[in-house]
Image (cartoon, rainbow, N blue to C red; front, side):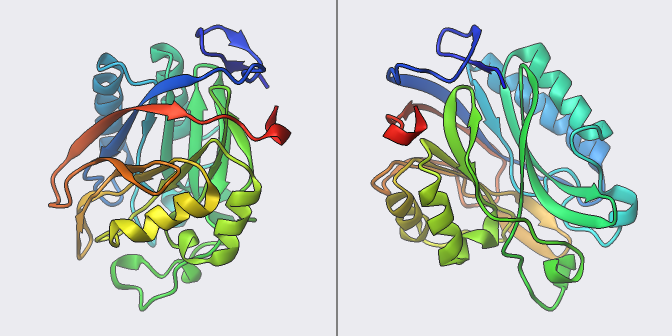
Length: 268
């Protein structure tokens, strides 16, 4: 697979492991349940604004396409040939950027909570949530009732950078964090869809354990009966908060020039 290198030209992942700074945009917005067209319109607007601000990577929250819904037969889509993936992929190609967003995926008779990654070259990767949330189904959030499990964090490349991803409740599983650590990533994507995020120290400990910067997104607005507070945040490898959005339920985009740490020797 071909990736963009630090000079913006097509090539393999950076073989010299030169220091790089990538401007990232972490988006917290109100994705209305079961309104994918409306949400895609908002996502496109936000991507265009982010790219105008110089962002290279734009990251959205878990399930931002339709939010939680019992109507998976109707609203879940395939990856990467579904209409929504195709639309976001075209946007990434047109604006020469990388976009990560969450959706309900359909694969035959199975359904997954997935995070999709696309770039100027098209579709790159998708991660399927593996440690599903089990609850009394308020707001249709009993994931065990509707979704199938993925296989856990793995290593992939985005823009010549070694990365891994896990989603929301995945982070509660020690096995998930260990799998992420073994991937030896240079960056971790951690999308969420929660009413409120925990204290910074909880997710900061994940960054320390994995040994890589952690990009955290979360939604705002009303997810059925839940009012969501947001709280997008960037952690460095020491678990320190280096950029953060409000936790007051207001839409916001945070921008940060992320310094990519050296790759582990096994990743060259």
